[in-house]
Length: 138
Length: 138
DNA sequence: CACTACTTTAGAATCATTATAAATTATAAA
DNA sequence: TTTATAATTTATAATGATTCTAAAGTAGTG
Picture 1 (cartoon, each protein chain N blue to C red):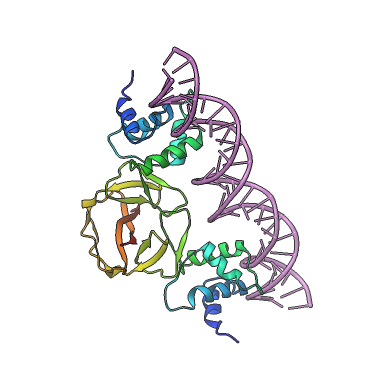
Picture 2: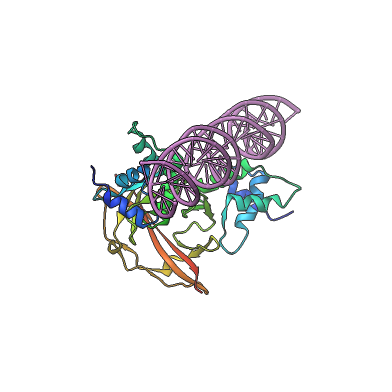
Protein backbone atom coordinates (compact mmCIF):
# COMPACT_ATOMS: atom_id res chain seq x y z
CA UNK A 1 0.00 0.00 0.00
CA UNK A 2 1.33 3.39 -0.88
CA UNK A 3 1.54 6.24 1.54
CA UNK A 4 -1.68 7.94 0.59
CA UNK A 5 -3.13 8.13 4.07
CA UNK A 6 -1.91 11.67 4.66
CA UNK A 7 -3.65 12.89 1.53
CA UNK A 8 -6.76 10.88 2.28
CA UNK A 9 -6.93 12.48 5.72
CA UNK A 10 -6.22 15.95 4.40
CA UNK A 11 -8.92 15.64 1.78
CA UNK A 12 -11.44 14.24 4.19
CA UNK A 13 -10.79 16.92 6.79
CA UNK A 14 -11.28 19.54 4.06
CA UNK A 15 -14.68 18.14 3.21
CA UNK A 16 -13.46 16.65 -0.06
CA UNK A 17 -14.03 12.96 -0.67
CA UNK A 18 -10.75 11.16 -1.23
CA UNK A 19 -11.37 9.89 -4.75
CA UNK A 20 -8.58 8.21 -6.64
CA UNK A 21 -8.37 11.18 -9.02
CA UNK A 22 -7.89 13.65 -6.19
CA UNK A 23 -5.34 11.45 -4.44
CA UNK A 24 -3.37 11.06 -7.63
CA UNK A 25 -3.33 14.82 -8.21
CA UNK A 26 -2.42 15.42 -4.55
CA UNK A 27 0.57 13.14 -4.88
CA UNK A 28 1.67 14.86 -8.05
CA UNK A 29 1.33 18.35 -6.61
CA UNK A 30 2.22 18.04 -2.95
CA UNK A 31 4.53 15.03 -2.63
CA UNK A 32 7.65 17.02 -3.42
CA UNK A 33 10.12 19.18 -1.57
CA UNK A 34 10.32 22.11 -3.97
CA UNK A 35 7.29 24.24 -4.65
CA UNK A 36 5.66 23.53 -7.96
CA UNK A 37 4.41 26.05 -10.51
CA UNK A 38 2.07 24.79 -13.17
CA UNK A 39 -0.70 25.56 -15.58
CA UNK A 40 -3.69 23.29 -16.09
CA UNK A 41 -2.12 22.40 -19.41
CA UNK A 42 1.13 21.30 -17.74
CA UNK A 43 -0.68 19.25 -15.18
CA UNK A 44 -2.86 17.67 -17.82
CA UNK A 45 0.17 16.62 -19.86
CA UNK A 46 1.88 15.04 -16.87
CA UNK A 47 -1.28 13.15 -15.92
CA UNK A 48 -1.73 11.92 -19.49
CA UNK A 49 1.56 10.02 -19.30
CA UNK A 50 -0.11 7.41 -17.11
CA UNK A 51 -2.33 5.85 -19.71
CA UNK A 52 -3.65 3.23 -17.32
CA UNK A 53 -5.78 5.76 -15.50
CA UNK A 54 -6.99 8.71 -17.48
CA UNK A 55 -8.33 11.69 -15.60
CA UNK A 56 -10.77 13.84 -17.50
CA UNK A 57 -9.80 17.43 -18.21
CA UNK A 58 -12.95 18.61 -16.46
CA UNK A 59 -11.86 16.77 -13.33
CA UNK A 60 -8.44 18.39 -13.46
CA UNK A 61 -10.10 21.80 -13.59
CA UNK A 62 -12.52 20.88 -10.83
CA UNK A 63 -9.78 19.50 -8.60
CA UNK A 64 -7.38 22.39 -9.03
CA UNK A 65 -10.15 24.87 -8.33
CA UNK A 66 -11.34 23.07 -5.23
CA UNK A 67 -7.76 22.83 -3.96
CA UNK A 68 -7.42 26.55 -4.57
CA UNK A 69 -10.68 27.23 -2.75
CA UNK A 70 -9.45 25.20 0.21
CA UNK A 71 -6.24 27.20 0.29
CA UNK A 72 -3.86 24.48 -0.91
CA UNK A 73 -3.00 26.27 -4.12
CA UNK A 74 -2.39 29.88 -5.00
CA UNK A 75 -3.18 31.40 -8.35
CA UNK A 76 -0.48 33.66 -9.78
CA UNK A 77 -1.11 36.64 -12.01
CA UNK A 78 1.11 36.63 -15.02
CA UNK A 79 0.86 38.70 -18.14
CA UNK A 80 -0.69 35.95 -20.23
CA UNK A 81 -3.99 34.36 -20.79
CA UNK A 82 -3.04 31.32 -18.79
CA UNK A 83 -3.59 30.69 -15.13
CA UNK A 84 -0.53 29.66 -13.18
CA UNK A 85 -0.89 27.84 -9.89
CA UNK A 86 1.64 27.56 -7.09
CA UNK A 87 1.83 24.91 -4.38
CA UNK A 88 3.48 27.52 -2.17
CA UNK A 89 0.52 29.34 -0.67
CA UNK A 90 2.56 31.48 1.69
CA UNK A 91 3.00 35.18 1.16
CA UNK A 92 5.72 35.43 -1.46
CA UNK A 93 6.61 36.84 -4.85
CA UNK A 94 7.86 35.69 -8.25
CA UNK A 95 10.35 36.00 -10.99
CA UNK A 96 8.91 35.45 -14.45
CA UNK A 97 11.46 34.47 -17.06
CA UNK A 98 10.09 36.16 -20.17
CA UNK A 99 12.26 34.02 -22.42
CA UNK A 100 10.98 30.69 -21.12
CA UNK A 101 7.75 31.72 -19.34
CA UNK A 102 9.01 29.94 -16.25
CA UNK A 103 7.96 31.15 -12.80
CA UNK A 104 10.48 31.14 -9.97
CA UNK A 105 9.69 31.73 -6.31
CA UNK A 106 11.03 34.81 -4.65
CA UNK A 107 10.92 34.62 -0.88
CA UNK A 108 9.19 37.40 0.94
CA UNK A 109 12.47 38.41 2.56
CA UNK A 110 14.18 38.59 -0.84
CA UNK A 111 12.04 41.60 -1.64
CA UNK A 112 13.32 44.29 0.65
CA UNK A 113 11.08 46.67 2.47
CA UNK A 114 7.99 47.20 0.39
CA UNK A 115 5.99 50.11 1.64
CA UNK A 116 2.95 51.47 -0.10
CA UNK A 117 2.65 55.16 0.68
CA UNK A 118 -0.66 55.82 -1.04
CA UNK A 119 -4.02 54.73 0.39
CA UNK A 120 -7.44 54.62 -1.19
CA UNK A 121 -10.21 55.85 1.14
CA UNK A 122 -12.59 53.09 2.21
CA UNK A 123 -10.23 50.39 1.02
CA UNK A 124 -7.72 48.21 2.81
CA UNK A 125 -4.81 46.25 1.40
CA UNK A 126 -5.58 42.61 0.74
CA UNK A 127 -2.20 41.56 -0.65
CA UNK A 128 0.93 42.87 -2.31
CA UNK A 129 2.29 40.91 -5.22
CA UNK A 130 5.61 41.61 -6.84
CA UNK A 131 6.40 40.19 -10.25
CA UNK A 132 10.01 40.59 -11.35
CA UNK A 133 10.36 39.94 -15.05
CA UNK A 134 13.78 38.63 -15.98
CA UNK A 135 15.41 37.90 -19.32
CA UNK A 136 18.65 36.52 -20.71
CA UNK A 137 21.52 38.83 -19.81
CA UNK A 138 23.72 38.29 -22.88
CA UNK B 1 -11.76 70.66 -38.64
CA UNK B 2 -11.02 68.92 -35.42
CA UNK B 3 -7.63 68.83 -33.83
CA UNK B 4 -6.52 65.50 -35.18
CA UNK B 5 -3.24 66.70 -36.63
CA UNK B 6 -1.25 65.71 -33.56
CA UNK B 7 -2.50 62.15 -33.78
CA UNK B 8 -2.09 62.04 -37.55
CA UNK B 9 1.51 63.12 -37.13
CA UNK B 10 2.17 60.72 -34.28
CA UNK B 11 0.74 57.82 -36.24
CA UNK B 12 2.62 58.70 -39.38
CA UNK B 13 5.92 59.10 -37.55
CA UNK B 14 5.36 55.67 -36.01
CA UNK B 15 4.94 54.09 -39.41
CA UNK B 16 1.19 53.65 -38.97
CA UNK B 17 -1.14 55.06 -41.57
CA UNK B 18 -3.53 57.57 -40.04
CA UNK B 19 -6.79 55.84 -40.83
CA UNK B 20 -10.03 57.22 -39.44
CA UNK B 21 -10.33 54.18 -37.17
CA UNK B 22 -6.89 54.71 -35.66
CA UNK B 23 -7.46 58.43 -35.23
CA UNK B 24 -10.77 57.81 -33.49
CA UNK B 25 -9.19 55.31 -31.10
CA UNK B 26 -6.27 57.68 -30.50
CA UNK B 27 -8.65 60.45 -29.50
CA UNK B 28 -10.52 58.15 -27.19
CA UNK B 29 -7.38 56.82 -25.51
CA UNK B 30 -4.96 59.70 -25.48
CA UNK B 31 -7.03 62.90 -25.56
CA UNK B 32 -7.47 62.99 -21.79
CA UNK B 33 -5.57 64.21 -18.78
CA UNK B 34 -5.91 61.20 -16.52
CA UNK B 35 -4.39 57.89 -17.51
CA UNK B 36 -6.90 55.39 -18.78
CA UNK B 37 -7.16 51.72 -17.89
CA UNK B 38 -9.23 49.53 -20.14
CA UNK B 39 -9.89 46.12 -21.53
CA UNK B 40 -10.67 45.46 -25.17
CA UNK B 41 -14.23 44.83 -24.07
CA UNK B 42 -14.46 48.26 -22.40
CA UNK B 43 -13.03 49.99 -25.43
CA UNK B 44 -15.32 48.11 -27.74
CA UNK B 45 -18.39 49.16 -25.77
CA UNK B 46 -17.40 52.81 -25.78
CA UNK B 47 -16.74 52.74 -29.51
CA UNK B 48 -20.08 51.05 -30.17
CA UNK B 49 -21.94 54.05 -28.79
CA UNK B 50 -21.15 55.96 -31.96
CA UNK B 51 -23.38 54.05 -34.31
CA UNK B 52 -22.55 56.29 -37.26
CA UNK B 53 -19.10 54.77 -37.61
CA UNK B 54 -18.70 51.20 -36.50
CA UNK B 55 -15.21 49.89 -35.98
CA UNK B 56 -14.82 46.16 -36.34
CA UNK B 57 -13.71 44.20 -33.28
CA UNK B 58 -10.75 42.86 -35.26
CA UNK B 59 -9.62 46.41 -35.93
CA UNK B 60 -9.85 47.26 -32.24
CA UNK B 61 -7.61 44.32 -31.43
CA UNK B 62 -5.21 45.19 -34.25
CA UNK B 63 -5.03 48.83 -33.24
CA UNK B 64 -4.51 48.23 -29.54
CA UNK B 65 -1.80 45.71 -30.27
CA UNK B 66 -0.01 47.95 -32.71
CA UNK B 67 -0.19 50.82 -30.22
CA UNK B 68 1.26 48.51 -27.61
CA UNK B 69 4.01 47.41 -29.98
CA UNK B 70 4.86 51.06 -30.64
CA UNK B 71 5.05 51.72 -26.90
CA UNK B 72 1.95 53.90 -26.57
CA UNK B 73 0.14 51.38 -24.38
CA UNK B 74 1.26 49.10 -21.59
CA UNK B 75 -0.33 45.75 -20.85
CA UNK B 76 -1.01 45.07 -17.18
CA UNK B 77 -0.94 41.63 -15.60
CA UNK B 78 -3.98 41.07 -13.47
CA UNK B 79 -5.26 37.88 -11.95
CA UNK B 80 -7.93 37.34 -14.59
CA UNK B 81 -8.27 36.08 -18.07
CA UNK B 82 -8.62 39.56 -19.44
CA UNK B 83 -5.92 41.84 -20.74
CA UNK B 84 -5.85 45.28 -19.22
CA UNK B 85 -4.14 48.14 -21.03
CA UNK B 86 -2.84 51.39 -19.61
CA UNK B 87 -2.21 54.66 -21.40
CA UNK B 88 0.44 55.42 -18.81
CA UNK B 89 3.49 53.66 -20.23
CA UNK B 90 5.91 54.96 -17.63
CA UNK B 91 7.41 52.74 -14.98
CA UNK B 92 4.70 52.47 -12.35
CA UNK B 93 2.54 50.10 -10.35
CA UNK B 94 -1.12 49.42 -9.63
CA UNK B 95 -3.83 48.95 -7.13
CA UNK B 96 -6.42 46.39 -8.13
CA UNK B 97 -9.75 46.75 -6.39
CA UNK B 98 -10.88 43.15 -6.04
CA UNK B 99 -14.45 44.23 -5.34
CA UNK B 100 -14.85 46.25 -8.53
CA UNK B 101 -11.95 44.95 -10.68
CA UNK B 102 -10.87 48.54 -11.16
CA UNK B 103 -7.21 49.35 -11.71
CA UNK B 104 -5.72 52.45 -10.09
CA UNK B 105 -2.28 53.87 -10.84
CA UNK B 106 0.32 53.83 -8.13
CA UNK B 107 3.20 56.16 -8.83
CA UNK B 108 6.65 54.71 -8.74
CA UNK B 109 7.51 56.88 -5.77
CA UNK B 110 4.46 55.65 -3.87
CA UNK B 111 6.10 52.25 -3.63
CA UNK B 112 8.98 52.74 -1.28
CA UNK B 113 12.34 51.18 -1.79
CA UNK B 114 11.90 47.97 -3.70
CA UNK B 115 15.06 45.97 -3.69
CA UNK B 116 15.29 42.47 -5.04
CA UNK B 117 18.01 40.64 -3.16
CA UNK B 118 17.98 37.42 -5.14
CA UNK B 119 19.47 37.10 -8.62
CA UNK B 120 19.19 34.33 -11.19
CA UNK B 121 22.49 33.52 -12.93
CA UNK B 122 22.49 34.44 -16.61
CA UNK B 123 19.41 36.60 -16.22
CA UNK B 124 18.89 40.31 -15.80
CA UNK B 125 15.88 42.18 -14.50
CA UNK B 126 13.58 43.47 -17.20
CA UNK B 127 10.94 45.07 -15.00
CA UNK B 128 9.46 45.02 -11.53
CA UNK B 129 5.70 45.14 -11.27
CA UNK B 130 3.87 45.58 -8.00
CA UNK B 131 0.18 44.79 -7.80
CA UNK B 132 -1.51 45.86 -4.58
CA UNK B 133 -4.86 44.20 -4.21
CA UNK B 134 -7.31 46.26 -2.19
CA UNK B 135 -10.80 45.57 -0.92
CA UNK B 136 -13.59 47.31 0.97
CA UNK B 137 -12.47 48.07 4.51
CA UNK B 138 -15.80 47.75 6.30
C1' DC C 1 -26.96 -3.92 0.95
C1' DA C 2 -29.35 0.36 -0.26
C1' DC C 3 -29.76 5.06 -0.43
C1' DT C 4 -28.20 9.68 -1.22
C1' DA C 5 -25.19 13.13 -2.16
C1' DC C 6 -20.94 13.94 -4.20
C1' DT C 7 -17.86 13.23 -8.04
C1' DT C 8 -16.31 12.13 -12.57
C1' DT C 9 -16.88 12.24 -17.31
C1' DA C 10 -17.37 13.35 -22.38
C1' DG C 11 -18.88 16.49 -24.95
C1' DA C 12 -21.22 20.88 -25.75
C1' DA C 13 -21.18 25.77 -24.85
C1' DT C 14 -18.92 29.99 -23.99
C1' DC C 15 -15.65 33.64 -24.02
C1' DA C 16 -11.60 36.08 -25.43
C1' DT C 17 -8.49 36.31 -28.92
C1' DT C 18 -6.26 35.36 -33.44
C1' DA C 19 -6.35 34.02 -38.32
C1' DT C 20 -8.21 34.44 -42.97
C1' DA C 21 -9.18 36.26 -47.19
C1' DA C 22 -11.76 39.58 -49.66
C1' DA C 23 -12.95 44.51 -49.97
C1' DT C 24 -11.37 49.08 -49.01
C1' DT C 25 -8.18 52.85 -48.41
C1' DA C 26 -3.75 55.61 -47.99
C1' DT C 27 0.19 56.81 -50.24
C1' DA C 28 3.53 57.59 -53.71
C1' DA C 29 4.59 57.57 -58.47
C1' DA C 30 3.20 58.57 -63.13
C1' DT D 1 -5.68 63.56 -60.96
C1' DT D 2 -5.21 58.90 -62.00
C1' DT D 3 -2.94 54.53 -61.17
C1' DA D 4 -0.61 51.04 -58.82
C1' DT D 5 0.48 48.71 -54.68
C1' DA D 6 0.90 47.89 -50.17
C1' DA D 7 -1.34 48.60 -45.84
C1' DT D 8 -5.62 48.35 -43.49
C1' DT D 9 -10.27 47.12 -42.36
C1' DT D 10 -13.78 43.91 -42.14
C1' DA D 11 -16.92 39.91 -41.31
C1' DT D 12 -16.48 35.59 -40.31
C1' DA D 13 -14.18 31.34 -39.17
C1' DA D 14 -10.91 29.13 -36.25
C1' DT D 15 -8.64 28.47 -32.04
C1' DG D 16 -7.69 27.72 -27.24
C1' DA D 17 -8.73 27.98 -22.53
C1' DT D 18 -12.26 27.39 -19.45
C1' DT D 19 -16.96 26.39 -17.80
C1' DC D 20 -21.35 24.04 -18.16
C1' DT D 21 -24.37 20.03 -18.52
C1' DA D 22 -26.46 15.95 -17.66
C1' DA D 23 -25.73 11.19 -17.32
C1' DA D 24 -23.02 7.50 -15.20
C1' DG D 25 -20.20 6.17 -11.39
C1' DT D 26 -18.60 6.19 -6.48
C1' DA D 27 -18.03 7.16 -1.41
C1' DG D 28 -20.08 7.32 2.88
C1' DT D 29 -24.05 6.56 6.03
C1' DG D 30 -27.43 3.77 8.03
